[in-house]
Length: 455
Image 1 (tube, rainbow, N blue to C red):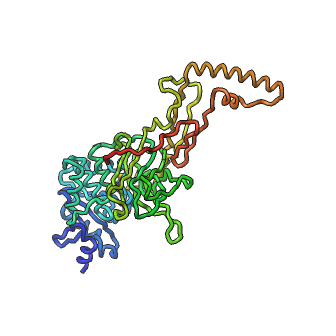
Image 2 (cartoon, one colour):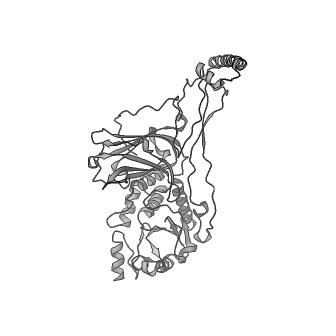
Image 3 (cartoon, helix red, strand yellow):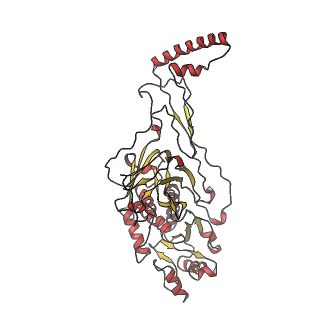
């Protein structure tokens, strides 16, 4: 009866049913093993793997030559595995950070190269999604298959009779990143200008989009970079050609975006998750990323048409502040550079936990990295600089006369503003947003462009 119960719980995976074992364990290759949830507690072991039974199997077939790579969001592991486990965990239903994924692949590769008899056991709660990212990612990293899609499909065919493997589109996207990069790329800073969604789905009547942007490194709760402020929220109707949400936020490396609908259910205001997706800024061709409906996570395919897509327009980080004078003029250094401190110091998991044995983990306190500071050079025409100097001399003389006449000093900045120069105001940012001063050039308004293609 217990065997039938275990088979019922995990009927969509290929189990190991030989030699008296009945385990949620699958050989994807001779040296890569996918393992489902395993526990010491007898109540869980009734319908999931027993830790003692898994340990017995691995010692019988691979004595002294097996290691477990835990991908769960928490570093907890049955005691019997404690000295044989490395933890590279991330949150269920999400893609890992690209840096963490490469660290995992390097560790697996080092272990397998150490001895030709070594095997790697990739362990996650469900034993499908996160284990699939690790195994398919390793097959793509070692070029075992000609493409990432081939590696993903092979994993699905081996792990599940129904070919259920990596079901989260963002997780598949990160396997493709591994196939393209072969090494962690240098994170590219981009300015995410706007997010465009089309067409407006008819099943909702109206949609009031609320966009949240996160730094997804580590595990949940992720560090929130941006949330659509209430004053910028507006409803879109089916008659609208598309939904446009202006953002103007700097992003770098791994990015997680969640799109909600601010609506009312039974007279109660609520926020419903429409979909989410993850991407890396180093894989954005021509500063535009387009994702089709099937490339979005947790989207309701019954509510969104097949033609639905999300388009993101970017500019390079250096163009965050468009120049107000021709770029051929050289900086004179007469004025201090403007500064905009970005709130970009995500809360990360303790570094010693990543890639160390569970038995050796010691809690430590980590200090978030300092928020980077963006600077803009000041460009001044030499002729304008001379004129400005003359104007400053006049201002000084005028100020002296005013002091002698009325004992009241008129602020020099006011006179300069009236005559030739508008003093730059310090820019601030909250949750990663950039408030551009009014005197600066604003980004161009969105215009409809028929651009096809996807990432």
